[in-house]
Length: 138
Image (cartoon, rainbow, N blue to C red):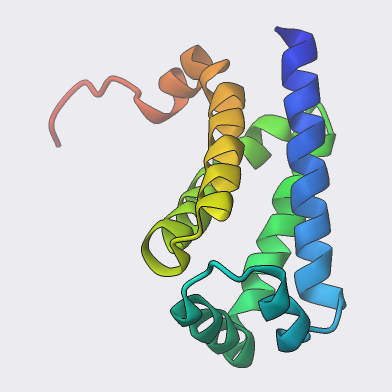
């Protein structure tokens, strides 16, 4: 199981460090971006352009880079995996409800499942942290 976790960490870190660097430092060219995927709903490109124009995409890129970097190190990979859950859900639901492109949905679903393996392999530890028994209701 340790080798599986290491491979998953490596793959997720590679994908998310690259995605974060791409959003933060590489120039955005909408014509190249649109030519890559013909089967995507045009509303997705409007949404993506809106995120780029407002600067929100830099926020997403920062957290992709941060989470990918946290996955690299043994001491911080669990924190990175837990922080990646809402990010991956957001990415997955964006493609389910807006782009409707099956390739993106499958890719994001696989990333979510791989991250789920990392998180669930530490379920006991996380349960004791997040679901502590309380002595009283107040």
